[in-house]
Image (cartoon, helix red, strand yellow):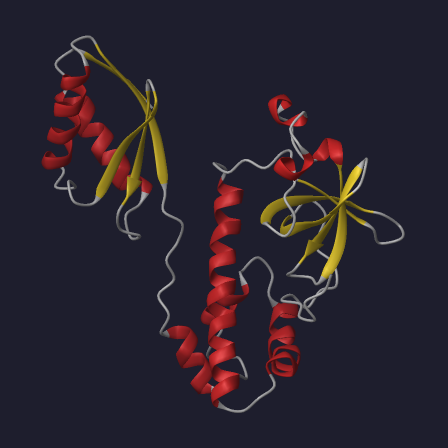
Length: 251
């Protein structure tokens, strides 16, 4: 399977890095996969598809549905350049995963900007990407390609029209989630009242969402992308300071 387009200049991802992939074929002991950002195939041994024993006995189409996007980790690249990937150790709450999702978002924005530019200026998109974007990708290090262009825009040989398209985009980062535990000795009504009071006291009643994941775990999420984990902490601090002793709260 090939899209005839490779986002990154490199032919192969680095070992132990996260990659976007999809399952393309099922075998008895492994899955064939496709990495769209590198336009290359990979394999995933069955035992690296999940660590959850409850999923191991599910139908293969449930465990590895074809052509659905997933995130995995490159476990190894063999001497014959066979890429072995895994999704057994992906932690969606980790900072690494959140950074990867942020990079995915920025990659989509950059693609959109370049496509708009090439259409408007009658350029072949693939040729323009290979000639003008690949050289930038080869120079960047830890930056996402989008961030590298923004940070070095004054020094790069890029058409100002394209630069303006990229600079005028506001990148929305992944909405942060904070978990905390709370139990009431006076019933659920006290919890509801305490949450509402803390939201009002911090003036965040129209900004934060507080939801019950499963007793006693609650999630704090944001309705606005410029709200940070520090804002979540302000809410929790107020919840704790308002406590009269009938709530048990831990973060």
